[in-house]
Length: 227
Image (cartoon, rainbow, N blue to C red; front, side, top):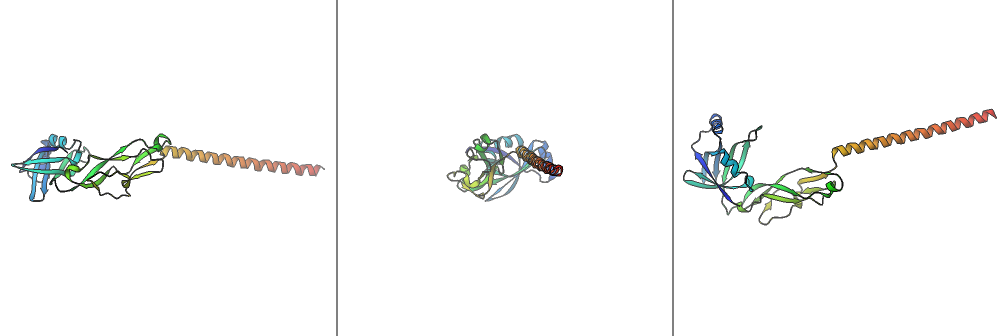
């Protein structure tokens, strides 16, 4: 995994107003902490930060922070975003070591078109889109592949069905569902309507038969009276 370098400005003021002022200057307030150092408040250029977090590694990119004369190998964590615009408003950088495993959230990459979709008209309902893993910083995958092409309607793909990746420990519950193949709601409604109509037609048929039997009995009685 490639390492990215970011310059971090030190000496920023803490608090809501100073942080807002930084954001207006296209800077993102952040905190650097980890083993062997005291927490450091910094500011990161917004464009450089977004470029660092949109590589193939995503939010698990290895970032070397230049803080004054010091450099800290780190990963971005506790990312806070604006509730409407989605912009990053604050984040933490955790200092790491290349020879110590860390925990990370890794996205699921669903591969293939399920048989229940192509052959039976079902749809893929995504339940969870990521798993938690533990691995050395350089071994964290950019995504976890999930082969779902053999799933049929009613089948569920769980964490336990993911292929193992060497050097990566999956921390998520093995029974946690990731995706399931279901019948579209519109199709269920259509089937329910058809069943209801068939039931009504069946009832009309029974009523018709009962009416015919009644008419036959009345006719027989009239014949007996005439005799």
